[in-house]
Image (cartoon, rainbow, N blue to C red; front, side, top):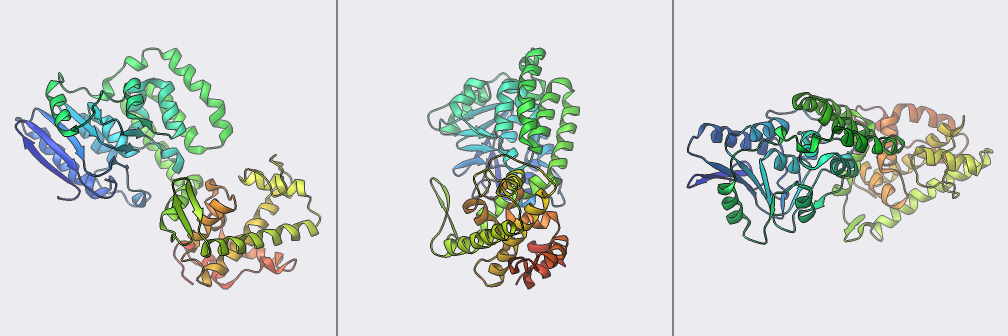
Length: 441
């Protein structure tokens, strides 16, 4: 196995085999390897078809999230998808498990798709505050139409193989022996079928635009930046030439990548996967706080939260104002049961003070070794205290807002209650570029 993929020719069919455990993530090295393989395919006149297979339980989980935001190495996944789609011989993606995000985009760049019944395919990028970035917003509407594309991209949920077959996203579902069936299928098809050239699902332009307009109000009200940009891109699949649509998608992806919502959502995603299982355990029902280490940390954070609430009440701030301020910040419900987002002159101050109290306690817990990193506090606060995922948890939210500004404010608030006394670890993080992401106790 070389750099996550192998290539061999059986008779006149090229077999590409993804093998990059654990989830065949399409990182820079694997994309470079696949680029070399498909360049060879383009030059070999004896190859009559290509089948893309994958090892393990997943076809591909998509791009490596740890590489997002870093200097991009060529070729980009979007370029690889264009190269695959441009093949003069038919390319078949054979999915034995989940094809998600960039994995789904790779499959859509192939000319045909075949899958086992347990396979699923989806574009969950919006859950990370992103839009698909390798042609997904342009190819999916061409395959399944506006309504289905909106449901998959805006909703961020994968669909099972049989449903994908009904939608036109998958061409065939086979019961077993995927490699054998995929090769046989590749020999049967009439030739290359670039997804970008498909127009059948775009012919009813008025219906397409109605589907987009039906979603527009809900998406705008949600406040989800990525969903709004994704809607624009899907609309562009109808209104713009394919290459221009790809350019619009690339701009939207870069915009979302910089946006605080995406920074926060990606932060929590990684924090959940890095936190020790004695703090937060993954179960079939989701992630739960582990006892006793996790519950002890949550109890300390909750106590700081309650002290800050009491301090605000003593200063004459009403329960209604506190509830409204926190709901406006992204909490599903205020601490006193209110669910209405009431914005007033004190709203921002309430939000900042409540955040500061938990951040200060979180910094103390990191310094005391109760958790390994500030991100652990965020994961626990999201799962146990209802902190909004779209803000990244308290530590990330404070960092995005500006730790130096926060600590300067805390010098004034500490006179009201020592809960706002900034501990040394927090003051240190405020003075360092990168904040909690780079400092250690």
